[in-house]
Length: 225
Image 1 (spheres, rainbow, N blue to C red):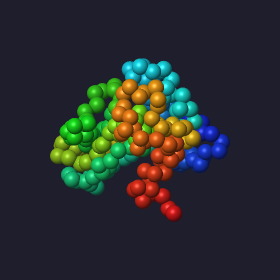
Image 2: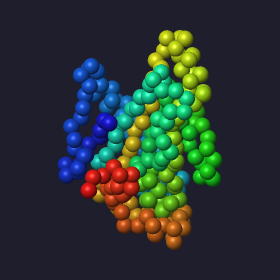
Image 3: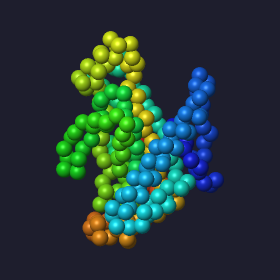
């Protein structure tokens, strides 16, 4: 994962960046692409706030100093086969997750009424998904989106065409997780109370962005005690 943007000096994720030795342009390209994705999230976050009837900075003011991570993933479509699970059914912890168009199909999402649909991102477009932090701060008005990535018959057909044409058979997804600053209080915002159910919103109260992260990691046994 590649950090995008500055972190507060006291934050716990000020780990050094890792630059692969065989990719001399790694830092430049990751920073350039990551900054573009982050700019897109800022724009969408502002538009979302306006659509909810609140100040456009309602969400973006909490993003400065957030642990934004560009996390490209690659899956070998030759070493794997139909049925392989590249990312099991889950939601993201982030505020908003943003994706470039993957090289191959395989991403599925669930709608709010539990319908599973395949994602098809048009050329030149980006995909955004809401995360658990967004669900918290909106009192459940926005839901964290469930999704998965699997190796399907359609994925294999696309891989076979790539083999014939001499193209790469790796499924690459350029994903970035954007977060609120670690100490932001993510309790449901009072100015959004016209959107969420007051009783349901109580379950989201009293947690910072860091608390949400640690709670989710603990639930998936990713935190050592």
